[in-house]
Amino acid sequence: MIKPTHNIIWNMTRKCNFRCEYCYFPHDNSPVTETLSVEKITDFLNGTGHTWNVGMTGGEPFIYPGFVDICETLTKNHIIGVDTNLSMPSKVREFADRIDPDRVNDMYVALHIQERERIKGVPAFIESARLLIDKGFNVIVNYVVHPDLEDRFKKDCEFFASQGIPITPRPFKGEFNGRRYPEAYGDRARTIFGKHPEQGKKVAFNFFGIPCSAGMTLLRMEPDGTIFRCPGDKTVLGNVLDTVNTYAEPRPCTKKRCPCRGLEHVHLTATQEDLVQGIQYAVVAENDLSRKAFAQATSLSPGHPCAENNLGVLAWRCGDKAKAMSHFQAALAATPEHDAYVGNVQGALEDSADFDPEICLNVNPILSN
Ligand code: SF4
Ligand code: SF4
Image (cartoon, rainbow, N blue to C red):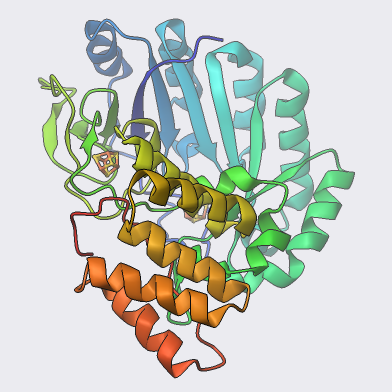
């Protein structure tokens, strides 16, 4: 399969036939009426002269009218990816029969175990997942390890593995009990993500001010055809029903949280690459590899506040509080206004039993937060 360099994330609809508790979309399962002409979409994509990876997401894409027809049209010249809850067995069978697995980059299947149990949908899920796997689709079954599900996660993994369905843990991203995840997993992350260190990449990095090719090689399309620069930056570049003006060159990122895919499109310096790697490892509690990456960053950029702060977090995790404090103070001295650095110095001074220092996700040293 060709690996396209250009990605467009098509948010097909906000509607969904599930009601996951942690979902931020409205729980609306009424028929999808806002639809786009797939010919208009292919006209735009073909007109760019590139092969695109069209990431079809929602809500739930399979409830979109003519979904399999749309996939068939798109895969003539482009590659697709699908995010689905795999809850419509007859449509999944049609998809598996008509779509060439070589034209599908990946199928991200969300398990949502509590919701699936609520609708008594576990056996149907296993059947659909097995069908796609057996047909040769690259199926990745994601399990969002919400803090509420941490206790049952291991048992669920074992059960689905026994059915021939490997589970990939996905970090929960958001606030829970006043803590920001995934950073707040702390050392528990090793148990959850030990076999999946790549999940450390699923962090909302702060790339503010760093040049990014989003707007050229990454776009987001809304249900009405509006094209945004990317999932994080909602600058409108046009509409596929009319005209779209993509950027001619990389531009600085304007957001402090990059929700997804940015890592593939942002232009990092060598130090920033080390910082990103260090953060990825820190999030999944690969502490030695993380320390090595941050040390490499400080050898390239001595005193870099992000590296100093995060070396402090790692030292705190090992119980070396004096060393941690010296790193936290170095970070704060370099960037005095930074909320995380202020909080970490204060927390280390107070040294209460539940103090869990904050990892810095800002890899750009010129900025305060
Ligand atoms: S399946 Fe996805 S879109 Fe649907 S309710 Fe659950 S989290 Fe939301
Ligand atoms: S770094 Fe992320 S949020 Fe910023 S422009 Fe790139 S893709 Fe968008």
